[in-house]
Length: 254
Image 1 (spheres, rainbow, N blue to C red):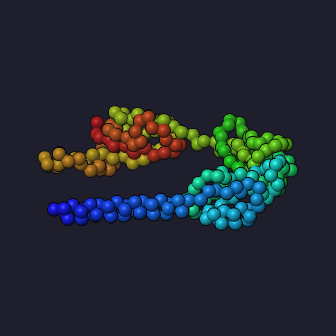
Image 2: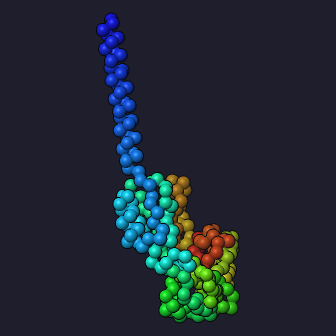
Image 3: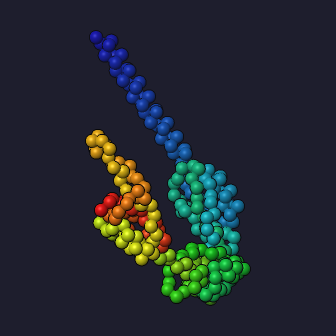
């Protein structure tokens, strides 16, 4: 019995040693894949890339901004900042300095989108966000406002955002209720609403009792010989539809 306990204790000790060794190896492996982000601000992009690669990191120059403090062509900001611990292979996002602002911001308000783009790009600037707005009595495709404004100084980005006049919205109509009205009256209401009459169908008559339990297919309303009343309409009443939209009707003899 003593020998059994001795063997059991030895096995437990060996398992504990193995577990501690595994945890230690795992910790070393994890920390071995971590690096501290170096300072890249102030370096040229190729220098910043070499420094980052030496640490096992990647870099992306994502933006370019004006800066009165950082010389043109040098890194002005980075993310993550220096000193942060990250995994190897992490991508550091950089912004490059364009130096102090030397270009003047043109006034493109009132110009077309094409003329504004030419005016902006020939100054060495880029178009930023272009937003559209429906403004009454404004010509289509005309610049209504810009940001930054003309002759602005101390701007950060070499981009000009534009607000353009959007094309006029097509007229929309609210679908009238036609259910319960006579077909001829419904057709006149459709025309008066700026719409057009589409297909007109009538329920096919049931020929057997079994067919009464199953919805019958629609038949051409041309078979109707007398007045008809509207049972269903598509689009439904209250829906917004465009000018000239077709309205389909399901009718039945009155």
